[in-house]
Image: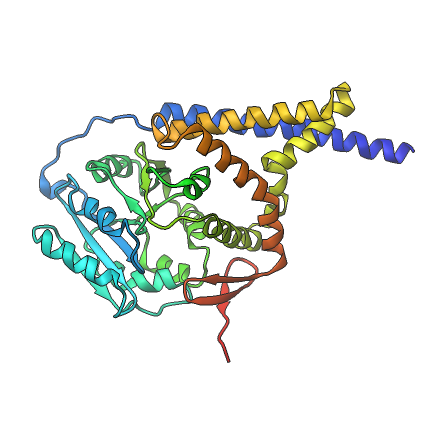
Length: 370
C-alpha cells in the first residue's frame, strides 16, 4: 500500500506541475502575440541600390480554386526589389497555365517559371524548388506555399525584421486564416511557419528529409543564425479543405516529430482533454475537488484561452462564427490522441505521389513499388 500511495502522490505531483507549466505557456504566448503581432514599424527609406532584394520561391503542384488569387497577391506587392520564382515539377501540371496567365498579365514584375525540378534528394518539395533556388538573385529568400496570400506591404515589413545589423538573421511568420468553410476552421486552431534565407548546402541537406520545416530552424540555429518573428502574419487561404486532409497532415507531421524528437511521445499529455483529466484527478487527490467539475471547467478555460489566442493572431475578430470555432475546436481536440496513436502505428508516410519509410533522425527512404 505504501508503494501504491507513493505512486499516486507522484502522479498527483505530475498533474500539479503540468497545470502550472501548461498555463504558463498559454499566458506567455497570449501576451507575446498581443504585444508583438500586428505592430507597425517605422520603415527606413533607402536608395534602391542599398535595398535588400528578396527572392520569393513558390513551389506549386496542382490547382485549387484560390491558386490564381493567392499568386496574384505576390505580383502586386509594394516593394521595389523582389523576384518571384514559380516552380512546377511536372510538364503537364495545370498550375503552369495559371502561372503563364499571371506572367502575361504582369509583364513588369520580375517573375520566372521553372519547370521540371531537380532531383537532389527524396523530398519532392525541395526537388521542385531547387531550380528556382539556384536561379535566385537575392540573399533573402522566402519559401512560400501555394495556399498563402500576402498583403501589399508583407515584404517590406519582413525585410525590416530580417535586416538586422547584429548579424545574420532568419525570420518566420505565424499564419492567420481567411474565411474558410468549417473543415478549415479545424485547421485554423493550429499555427504554422514559413522560412527564409538558406544556403545551398543546407537546401541539399534538407532534401534528404521529409521534415525540412523542422530541420531548417535547428540547422540555422546551429550555424549561428539569429531568429526574428515578423510582426505581420501570413494569410492561409487554401482552396481545398476537409477534416480528412487535416487529419492526414497532422498524422504525417506527428510521425516526423516522433522520429526526430523522441520527447514527442509525451506530447499527448499537453493536449486539452488528456491534460484536463490528469490535472482534474490531481485536484481531486490533493484538494478533494470534484474531478468531473474540475475537468469541465479546465476544458472551458482552455477553450477560452485558445479563442483569445486566435483572435490575437488574426488581429481582430475571427472570420468565422463562434459556433464554427467551438465545433472545430472540439473536433480537433477530440482527434488529438487518435492522431498520435495512428502516427505510432504506421511509420510510413504517404506524401504527394510517393510513399516513404522514416529512419531515426527524420531522414527517409522512398518505398518503390515492385
